[in-house]
Amino acid sequence: MISRRLQRFLKDLTLLVKPGIIRLLLITCGCSMLVATGGDWRLLSWPLVGWTLLGLALSSAGANCVNMWFDRDIDAVMHRTQYRPLPQQRWRPMTVLLLGLGLGIVAHVLLWWQVNALTAWLATSGYLFYVVIYTFWLKRRTVQNIVIGGAAGAFPPLVGWAAVQGELSLVAWSLFWVIFLWTPPHFWALALVKNADYTRAKVPMLPVVCGEVETKRQMVWYLLILIPVTLGLGVFAGFGPLYFTAALGLGGWWLYLAVRLLYAPGVTGAMAKFRYSIVYLAALFAAMVVDTFI
Image 1 (cartoon, rainbow, N blue to C red):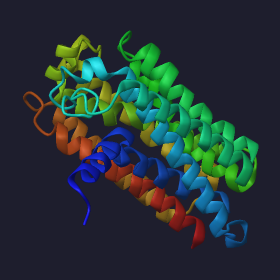
Image 2: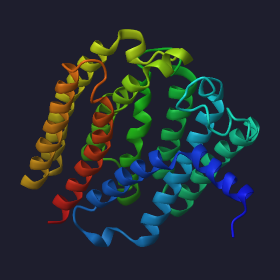
Image 3: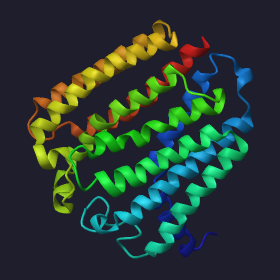
Image 4: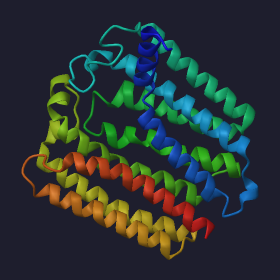
């Protein structure tokens, strides 16, 4: 039987590494690996898939830990984050920082050793982009924090592609841009709901600086750009009707939700839009995989 102390340790560790975020990163990485095969299963092996996903998971977990360490002051004043291990002083800040740095180093070495150097450097680039560019530099300084910093979440498809092909193609970079454009309307939906939290913490998220209406308007504009980019990806990758139907259907519904949110009072429907954006990304990448192998 697991002791209460061990249960608390495991629960806190889970909060520190943010497995929900890692799960979506692994989905996009894994789907990218499958698409990179061009439908030829012989390019994949269980060890290759396993080491790649493990390395990415460790790298992402490490970046999340460093983010928690740096943001412990604002986490303490936000209702959404005030019960995390560091604001509650259940973990020492230096322990979390060392854990985050250690996981990043282990991930880099593991990917270099078991996969290839390009994959290792891409994973580490995503780690550094999230930690240095987003967390340390942009998050507290500019309303464009999530626009630029969100690129960190677009590295996993590059990691997966490089693991299979050993290089990056136009299709791989198209996957990067899909997630880059997906991130702002995804995160701003949550920022609308948690606007009071970000205001209290003095984090210049778009709703805090420009208001709800402008945030909703920007979300619509990003989707009007994202949908054509997903269609362009289909052209570059040579996908068939299944993918294009999915891209149009999934994107069209998200755009409908965004327009409805724009004309709704307050933040009505924002959380539903946030949840749908996660479904959208997973389903879009799944459609790529299915189209690759049929």
